[in-house]
Image 1 (cartoon, rainbow, N blue to C red):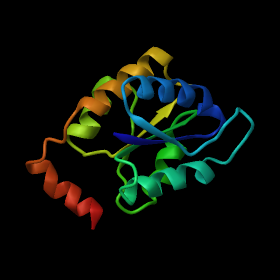
Image 2: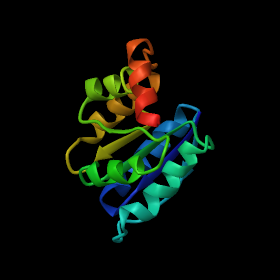
Image 3: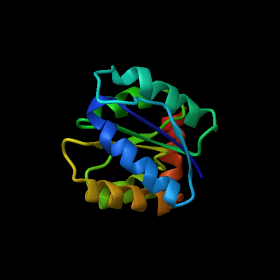
Length: 142
């Protein structure tokens, strides 16, 4: 799968680690920045990643920040993006199974690297349940 990644300076370290992890799993990673821990405004890197997901250029996207909240808000401004903040593997599983989240937002200051890898793995391997959840997603996407 082709996966968009983006982070501000506060999520750069985890973005780099997840990029390596995804490549090892055989995924194609598209890195929208940033490329260091120098301060950057998250909308400048998250919006292009979200647009790539919305246009179908990337199947999914993962964004990183200090908490992940601002990054999720920026991504969710793009029509067709459903970006969820995850704080453990179960929240990531439910974001996919119930909400068909096509983007994930993670906070480097709130999670260990081990937790992040587990979250990413669960999120990538979980399918959307559809059924009663599909009508809700349609309402979101209108």
